[in-house]
Each structure stands twice: as C-alpha cells, then as structure tokens.
Image 1 (cartoon, rainbow, N blue to C red):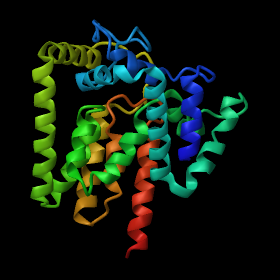
Image 2: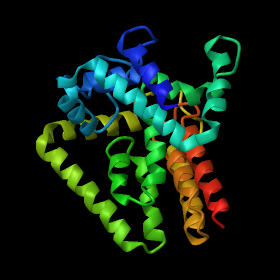
Image 3: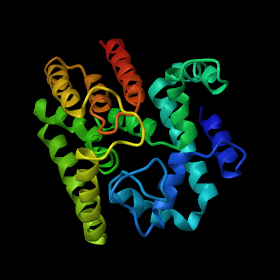
Image 4: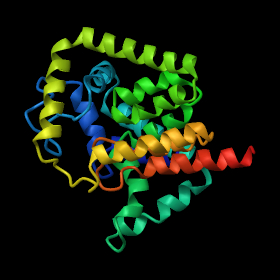
Length: 268
C-alpha cells in the first residue's frame, strides 16, 4: 500500500493522473490572499473550508514545490489507509474500481477516492487510533476538520486527566500560535464558518442526517464505550461527528473503528 501511494503520488506530481482536487486546494491555500469568501464553492481559487492552520502549514511548505508536496501527501494518505484497514486495504480498493470504470456504485469507491483526490480523511481516521495513546494528536483533528477532535472526550469520560490535559494544552498552544501569526485570518475564518454553517447551501450534497442529531447520537455512543472499555467507539464517534458529512465520508473512520475493535477482541 505504501508503494501504491508512491506510484499514485508520482503520477499526480507528473500530471499523468486525474487532478487531486483536495490536494490542490491545500497547496494553493498557502499562496492565497483571499482565503475565506462569503460562500464556499467546490473549487474557487485556493479557498478552503478549513481553519487557517492548513493555509499556514501550506505556506511553509511552498519551497519544496508542488510535485514533492503531492507525492508526500498521497503517500501519507495511502500509508494511513493501510494503517486503518491492514489486510483489507487491497479488497477495499478493488471493490471501488468498477465505479471508476463507470459500471458500479459510487459508495465502495470512497475508500480509494480519498487517496486519489488528496483528502486528509484517512490520515485523520488513523490519528483517532493513535491519539488514544498520544492525546496531543487531538490538536491535529481540531485544527483540520474540527469536530473529529470529539474523541478527546474519551479521556475525560474515563477519568484519564493527564491525557485530557495534554490534549487540551497542546491544542490551546497550537491554536494560540496560529492565531498570533494570523489573527485576521482567524477572524475571517470564524465569520466564514458561521455564515456557511447557518445560511449557505453546501457545494456538494451532504449526508441527510444533520450534524446536531449526529452529535446527540455520537455522545451516548462514546459514553457507553468509555464506561465499558470499548475504544472502537472513539473513531466511530469521530467519523459520525464530521461537520461536512459529504456522502459516506465517515467510512474511513468506521474502518479505523473496525481495526480497533478487532485488536481489542484479540487481546481479551
């Protein structure tokens, strides 16, 4: 899977493959002077629906160039895919190929599609597993897709106060540094987020269950999981809590939950 990520990344870097639209969005955010418009379209210049840290990191990476950036990003995505799915990685890729050939349903293709478009979904799904042991990583969830940091509450619910404090402290430091570097960008982002969450129609059809209902159902799942020692509820709850639930975008997190559940059962 790691080798496949390198090959796909090289093809994208050389322009021999379909454009990784989300990867382009992340890259162009580093040079944008108008990051947050009034409303968000699918691809409008370099504008993104993510917090400013994505743009700040992208700006720091500009010297390495686009080919190196997309190669590293795509390789990391496929590595995270393998980390979540392990032996199921190849079957999950295979079941999605028919859709790319125009002869199958779209939903199974989601597993492969996130690697091809350069989206962070698999990386964040993998981090929900790792963050159970290294809670500082919840800060990455918070400054990317925001509500996927929902899993931080696992430590609070289980009385793991040191882990909870580490996650909260690192998140506050990261947010503080990012805000200090670009306060105006954060103000623009907050205005953009409020407007698009409350008023604007999303550019891509979203999952029919609203965020509020999903949060209300994810909370008791996590509480139950924390009280009964079921850590698989963490990635499952994080995926179910995504703000922008486009189609079946929770699937990578559910694959991560399956991996955690399998390992928990094997250890008991």
